[in-house]
Image 1: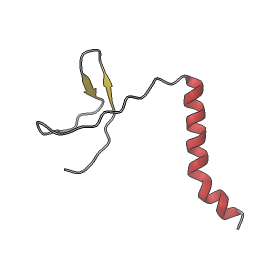
Image 2: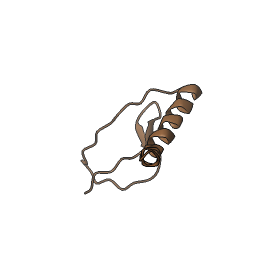
Image 3: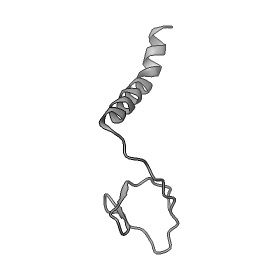
Length: 63
């Protein structure tokens, strides 16, 4: 099986995948807990992702 990242959430009782994905019994998982982000934090994160994604183009323009 290939390594894959899946979105999920905790419903108060168990971890639920956000989209269906077939897992075999006893499949090993690594769970990362992400703290809730405010709208402002989300906006800054999206801005930086946008900037980082354009960095090679910006650098290329200065050559």
